[in-house]
Image (cartoon, rainbow, N blue to C red):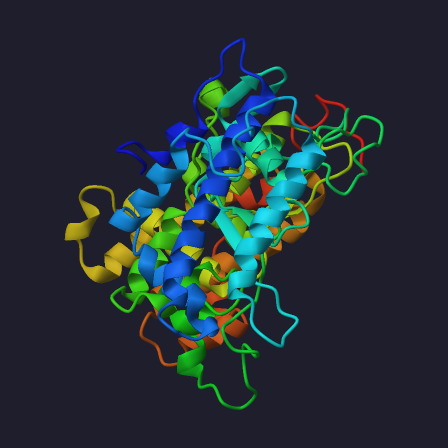
Length: 470
């Protein structure tokens, strides 16, 4: 919030035909410089306290307080004020050359950072800007000559701070990579690695960084040989150590939250959301609620030469935690999957159970004895999961070359889940985790869909020519 309005309104003021890109960039640059000037004033007051330089970041955080605190509101309201900043009165003058203004910006920022530079070390303090929910910036065009989004203009504003101790982060859980990756036919507008005088490259900006760390826990080692009990290994907190750091950070840093709540949170992220409303009618996939959790459990690989399959995989990346492994040079599709993440697999297993529980018992099944309820849920597993995969193959969504391995993974997954349902309190049920028991294999009676998956070839597979590979 700034001056009683959401800060996003400052950045996302819609364009007019006369709005120049340079004017928007300079407006954003003035905002950034006023933030730094606000910090400079605080540093001057803070230094009088005589506190050690090593506490400056923690004290600044404490001063700002939580979101919507009076100090934050004051800082942002000051920053959006269009009045000129001392030393930058000509910032809106289009005749001021880029290099000249950049040098002045660097001198100003260096003068601020030197005030908190530790003595007798080579460590230089860094000013960090971070923009949360940054996808809003890429949705609004704010300049007409040429057409640029708020995100693009803000990135360009940061180029005036090149070689200055400034680092910018744009954070978002919105995973529409197509809005930020380069097109295949032209240079990306964000091209800092290229020389500023290279042909076709007049922008000095970083391309989006979309990689995330995996298996990064708070301690150097995820496991220590011979120190973990079987009970600990099967706990949610232990499973959360592996994979993306999202879940263990929530569990570790939110004492009031229950482990089960975090699992429910993970389950909520395994829902397929048809965000492209223009294609909503043409993308009603059969049994679509099972697509994300089964993609996790049995590792579905999607066809690369079917538009519907490419669109579906993009949806899973955007809304259902699927990871992008690579994007071919032609950028007509992406290659993705679900890495080995025990916590996400547990959430997927519970999501499938929840679906089969509702499907199997319906409205009246909950009044039956527990043993009969379990049999009805197991029947829902046996009927619907093979049927779902068979239908997705028939529609050409799943890679035909993986169907034999897919059948094996599906049978093992079904056997695993059914064995647990039949013996939920059995002391040896953990043995199922390392291998499928004979009892569970005999208990799983494959229906006709199993054969269809194994033998079947999609009627849609030959309708479109294959896309070129990288």
